[in-house]
Image 1 (cartoon, rainbow, N blue to C red):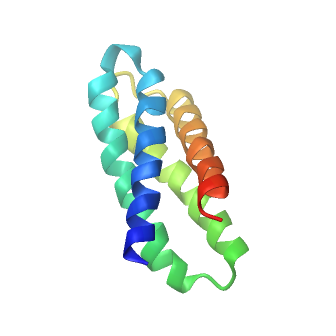
Image 2 (tube, rainbow, N blue to C red):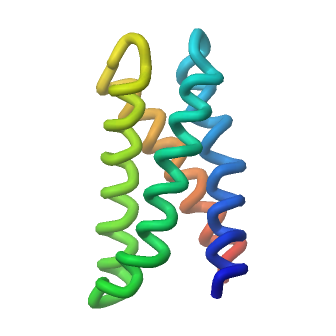
Length: 108
């Protein structure tokens, strides 16, 4: 179980960090670090706490993915120099969509 959780985190980071950095061309390094931190937090939270609390797999995915998008976007707004909510939400949604899609492919 730990190996699978670690693999999920590594795949997620490998996809989300560069995706978010592309949304912030003037501050790629700062946002890549912010993404790595926020994504690690939400991924571990989702794959440990939320997984145990969810009443169904569908509720786990729905609550987890929506929470991840919102929490990560909040970090991007706070860390970025321009504090743009729209850009942060879009970056987070795109990044999380990429990793969700990878999860569907690799974690069958």
